[in-house]
Image 1 (cartoon, rainbow, N blue to C red):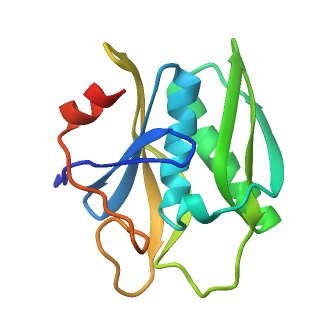
Image 2 (image 1 turned 135 degrees about the vertical axis):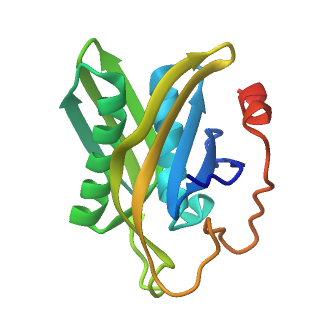
Length: 178
């Protein structure tokens, strides 16, 4: 099993996240003070694979809700529902909000209609239940999930948008930033 080092980033709304590549798949890692905030950051990481989040206008909000008892299953469900909503409504999302009361999770994603600027180098297919982890650390929460993507043509291991730089950082360095 081959794993590359994490590459960290921060969303326009201040959510901290990272990417990891393993055996050709891309993983997203979200960090937050709460579990819900870590899930929001993981969503930002996921959608940051295909678009520059800072360029997505907050024009339309789509609600999402589900019931799930297990935190790891909830992360996969959250990401899959966001992907499904983005596809159904033909939107690019850049802002994410999630709340929870026991087993009921509800939130929303905000974004804009997809622009016809050509095909992205990677197509998001679904979140994978493989290697999912949700855990509390001394610095907050971490939500990690591998994602099934379809690569189109040549692309670097983790897609970086023009003008964006994600310097490789160690896992411990990212945890210290939360």
